[in-house]
Every structure is written in C-alpha cells, then in structure tokens.
Image 1 (cartoon, rainbow, N blue to C red):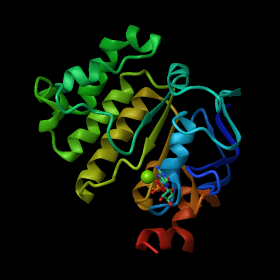
Image 2 (image 1 turned 60 degrees about the vertical axis):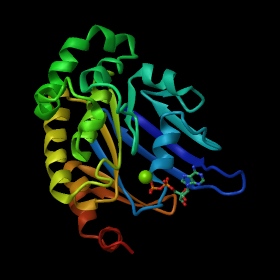
Image 3 (image 1 turned 135 degrees about the vertical axis):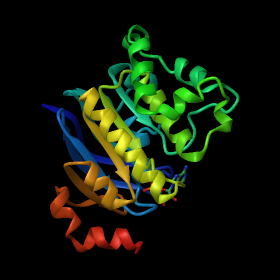
Image 4 (image 1 turned 90 degrees about the horizontal axis):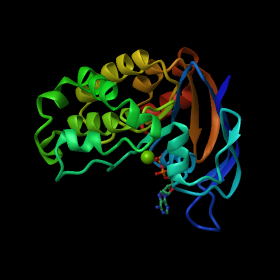
Length: 238
Ligand SMILES: Nc1ncnc2c1ncn2[C@@H]1O[C@H](COP(=O)(O)OP(=O)(O)O)[C@@H](O)[C@H]1O
Ligand SMILES: [Mg+2]
C-alpha cells in the first residue's frame, strides 16, 4: 500500500517564485526511500510542505490515501507523520530525558512512552549515558541523535528525515546512519530521507529520486542511481 503519495506539488516562499515546481513521487508502506539533491534543490521546502509547516500552492499530498496537504502540523503529527527537522527542535536548557519526554504529543505516543524511551536509549547509548545532562552539552552528532530520538518518542508511522548529515563530520554521519538503519529496521516503519550526501543516503534506502531545482529528474533503485551522471554531479557538488 502507498503510505505517501505526492502529486504535482508546487510550493515556495514568494508568491511569484515556486521552489518546488510540480513534484510527484510515492513511498510504499514497507520501504525506505531517499530523495537526493544538492544544496538549494528544495529538499527542506519539500519536508516543510509535507509536514504542514509550509502550505503548498498547488498539488496534493496523500497519507494512507487520505489527503493531508490542508491539515495543520499537529494534525499531521497526530496521524503518525513525524519529521526530524534539518535544524532545531531540541532544547538546550532541558536535559536529554526532558527533551525526550516532552515529545509525546500523539495520543498513541503517550501510551508507548516507556517502550519508546527504551528503544531510543538502546539505539543511542550516548543519550542514555547523558540523560540527566542538559542538551546544550551534547556534541553535534549526539544532538542529531536527540532530534531523531524526539521523533521516535512520537511513535512515528512514517518517518521523515531532513538532511541529518548537515554540519557533521563524515565519520559521525556514517555512524549515525548505521544506528538509524538498525532503529528503523526494529521499528519496521517506512522512511523518507532527503539528503545531499548521496552515497550514504542511497546505501541506506532501497530506492530513490534525484531532485534538481525543485523537480524530480530521475528515479530508480539505489544501485541504478549511484551509476548516473546526475548523482555523480551532486556528489562532487556541481
Ligand atoms: N524561508 C525561506 N524564504 C525564502 N526562500 C527560501 C527560504 N528557505 C529556502 N529558500 C530558498 O528555497 C530554495 C530551496 O531551499 P531548500 O528547500 O532549503 O533547499 P535544500 O534543503 O535542498 O538545501 C533555495 O533557493 C532557498 O534559497
Ligand atoms: Mg535543506
């Protein structure tokens, strides 16, 4: 079954300029999909449009067959669509555990709090070790783990991840993706990631799309996409 279906999506910040220029793609309920694109391609604009932070100008978004593009962000979360934002979302002046505990906004998440907390600590042992410390004391990689942990505390049924590699050292990114793979396998939930580090993203996913200037220009299996010139260009940053 299709968990997410995006049809001809147009979105942007200025009435005159469309950042997303008619984007269509889909995610099945048993897959992990990567949408890769260079810096400025529109990946975060897409994520904001899916989670209701930015209202699309045109097009439709369906989650489990239900139209969600007119809903408010908290209504979209309540349905189980949970985003790890590119930036922010964690509170420096709260402890790690407080940050996690305040994230259970969904009704379902309130019931599954203990299990979810256990899963977060099991997946990211550094967070458990530091659970009583302020989030402001974490390294960049640990801060990202906390941001992912907060999303897990919502009992996501579709997890959206926006450029989790942003600002992190290559080795940290590599380790983060290994932990994330393990976690999403355990949870058995569909995942949509957008990333500019194409090889890591396509290794993580089974299938992907390539986005250039607000449009999808290619789709295919991760193996196929890794061989294409479009992906190689993003990789070397042109
Ligand atoms: N808040 C904003 N206001 C105006 N323009 C924006 C805003 N955020 C992003 N943009 C523009 O939208 C385009 C796509 O940006 P973004 O979605 O952040 O790309 P990506 O996440 O792929 O790096 C860029 O040209 C960027 O300058
Ligand atoms: Mg971005």
